[in-house]
Structure formats: structure tokens, C-alpha cells
Length: 83
Image (cartoon, rainbow, N blue to C red; front, side, top):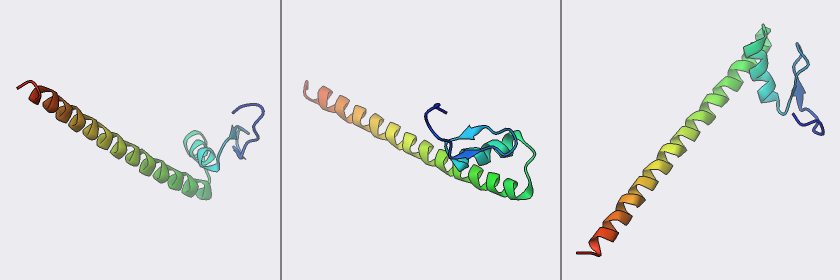
């Protein structure tokens, strides 16, 4: 974190600052021995992280498909103009 930015949350175990509670929950679940309540928050944050990653992958696949289709169509138009 930048020095001039105030942390939104800190780790209760190691006092590490985080920009969001989401990041803190992931940190606590992965690096420390969490309490049952912290474990629930970790699992919720992990599920959100998985959903966000799936959406990113879906957008990347669509973008690649559109790029490929546009390239093929452009190639066909260029080759079609020579014949």
C-alpha cells in the first residue's frame, strides 16, 4: 500500500494493511489459522474471487473470438477484392 493512503482494513494477526476488507479476508484465510467466523468470510471472499475470475475468462474468450472472426472477415474481404 502507498504510504499516503489509509488502509481500509488490517490483519488482526500481523497488522498488515489492506485496501479492502475482501483482500484482508483472503489474507487471513490463507496465511493464518482463522476462527470459524473468519473462515466463513474467507470462503465468501474466495467464492467472489472465483466468480470474478470466471467472468474475466469469459470476457477474454469472447474478445478472442470476436478478434478472430473480424480477422477472418477482413482477410476474406481483402482477398475477394483481388478476384
